[in-house]
Image 1 (spheres, rainbow, N blue to C red):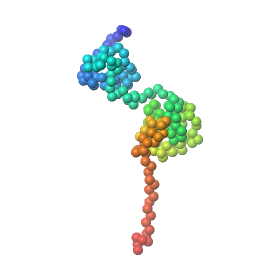
Image 2: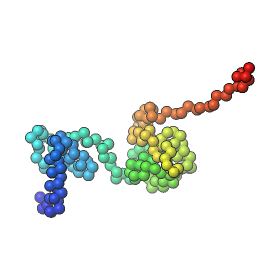
Image 3: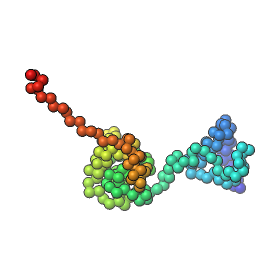
Image 4: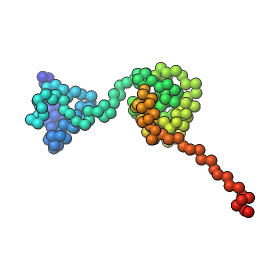
Length: 194
């Protein structure tokens, strides 16, 4: 076992004091959340509590889901390969998702999409502005502040389901409904005056 430095000991004492204020269940949930956040494993040499079964080696909690902490080390090239976009609209939306969730850039311009597209080693857009506009018309991107765009809720759901296009389309049906064209009704003045 490595010797514990005084600073480590002080931090450990603070953590234990804070955890003692919580119930056993909350202690387990908090430890699992911290381990997930810091990408640490809780398996190994720990003594099971009296209520835990002897065979359990990992603290169980509702935070074991992969959606709590998504792997942020995926390169744009690997992300695009995993999602396998087939159209320019899908590709723009994948890049927007990557900017939002992996680069902490929720608001972006067309140039940001084009730059990331190049970094991801994707084919060059014939016209990036039209591709971004088409993604917005499809409801996968929405207008943001100062001329920027951002990925919509439907766009996020769509990309999360890719490469399964059937699941992606069915998952966004309720959110992404096309607007009906609102043509003004023309009233004839003759019939109103007669």
